[in-house]
Image 1: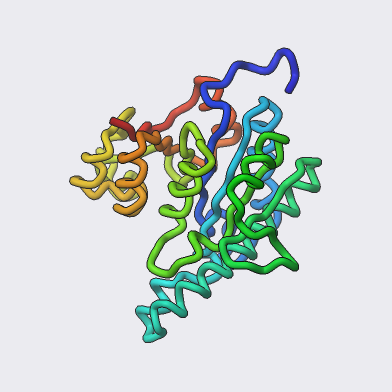
Image 2 (image 1 turned 90 degrees about the vertical axis):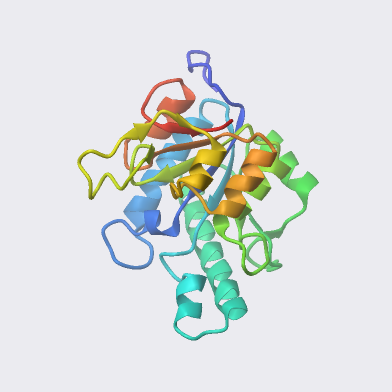
Length: 242
């Protein structure tokens, strides 16, 4: 951490991004330049001395709910989705380590050849050593989304906030891509997110964050420098809390 780096509002955070964020303009899979761009965003925050956890979805490769909707058994489909998140985590690890950032992929499903098993104390120690921890395979259980996994791990790791990187710069009362009069919230309560079905995260994740007073900051991952800017007290975002 350089001496002239701005002071940050948080010392340890969880960054949650969707698998689709890694697709770029493609309709499927991984777009390496996009993965590298997101890795550089993480690097810019890491350089401030912030300890970073990450959870990445798997929807760019396989989405369990879609599989079950097409006749596949839900449990099997969800496990396939978890494996997709491991592939994304390994891609992100590769990009971060190419930038010189020590990174650990920690999987809720044991696969020792490619990732560490999830052991809470070991993961906390990685963070204390300024390694980025990417938590893969969700919670290791079907029927739980990666949003819930991110909230669970953020609580276990004592993160001070969840940063949810999306395609829009916050939470709106309606879809800003379809409605020109959509209004962005600067701050919104957990209960309003649930009652108004604002779609920040699924209900289980919101309830878990609410019960543990864990703020959720929704921002645009497409805005260059957005992640670092918010940590330095700038930028446009919505804060879910209270």
